[in-house]
Image 1 (spheres, rainbow, N blue to C red):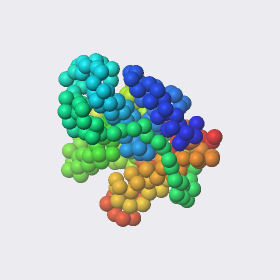
Image 2: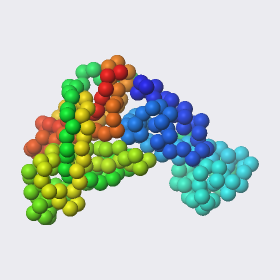
Image 3: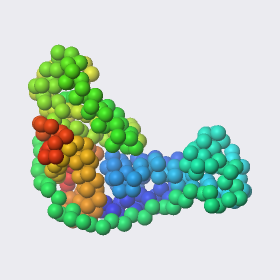
Image 4: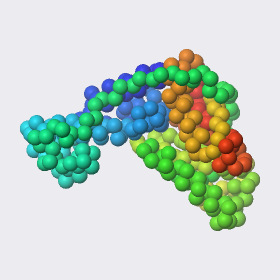
Length: 291
């Protein structure tokens, strides 16, 4: 399904099932798309994760119900997916800025959150610096950590800082340091869809595996044979990479006549050198297939 069309259908699905116990996997199934890329793209395009969007819509609808004063708080709590009136009131107050009691009789206090409408202006997506190449399967080794879609942009740079600090200050064991050096761990940052996690994904700081013993605390992963669209980034990290990532979803994917996403993963490639430099080079690799 075309990217913008998929987002619109996903929003319609969420609106139709707003009061049901739906999750990101079900939303992704409705548009025949990888949950990883739907959530990643939805966050970039709208500023909200799928979970945040559903929560905000429910709490806005709940505010309208509070204003109508036809149902008790305990009934509204269960209606909008909360286990207790207390948890509902806490979430309601955090979102609206006032308690349900304070909002009764005063519509001006309601924070409006209407269904999103996706409109995209294509601005040079075809001019992005990229190539499409086939890569045979590749084994990688490195450190892995789980991240939520909501916090990934803030937390992944911290993961890298911890890794760099550990390498620089010699905090790793001898076998880990050997693996880091021989396998160039840090050359790749790899996002991998997790079938068991609805709101998160695996992220690896990795390098090409050369057959050495895998130190405790490190993991192996095999990337399958795929075609990859490789986008060049120039500038200091993480801003340059995040900027191109946003450009991919807002400019390259919408209306792309040739390619669509092929798998639930992506790879960040990092060159050697000063990552804070204005001319630092990196790349984002997206698995694609011909339409």
